[in-house]
Image (cartoon, rainbow, N blue to C red; front, side, top):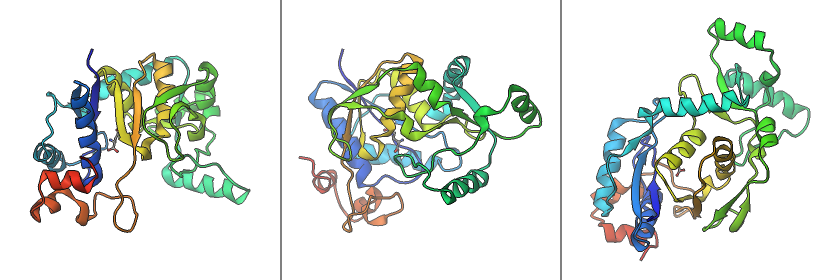
Length: 289
Ligand code: GLU
């Protein structure tokens, strides 16, 4: 079976040099290995994703000389598949509803931090400080019955109790040079959100379901997602999904050494193209042969 690669952008802005690097790397690796290249549109966040950004992704990738298989999987069309996975986690008693608003969570974190250090996840966000896990079934039912909005969280302690040591094969490098067999540390993320009221899934859940469903064998993506792989490994284990090989790559930085953002005009592919750059210039700018 040929290896299967994927490029999975979110259409919440225009692509920049960092995306070009990731897409071209996936394209090159697929080509070198006689593999397939899939494109997946990660558009679960309806408040931030826009059709013109999705259209621009297709145009920019084609301009770069990248070809992908069709049909393209658009995550917003598959909420039912993610819902079914959440049902499976719920059936194992591994998710619970939490009813605090974002402001309430922030207030609880401030309270915890006033009492000493409170742990933060690998992205720097404070772990969930609430006590929703210990609400009784009656309390939950009453709040849900009243129409209170809630997020579904993974009960990390319960999930960990069901899984042994988790590892993944890293063909690239983590932020501290981690490579080869890496030990997953999902507990560093606390009780992560699996679904929200306005978005009935989450990045972690949909990415894991889709990679499995699409038969992805090689996940090639930016090192900013390195430690997310811990949560992905945990979900794969809980849902009985196959485990791809991971290759996290360095991020392209701007002249000041900052991570590129979708709003930086200087490194946007559309801007570079308007200034007369060609696909070969983009390859050179991101350091690809
Ligand atoms: N959609 C994610 C992003 O644009 C990438 C997800 C992944 O490659 O796992 O950052």
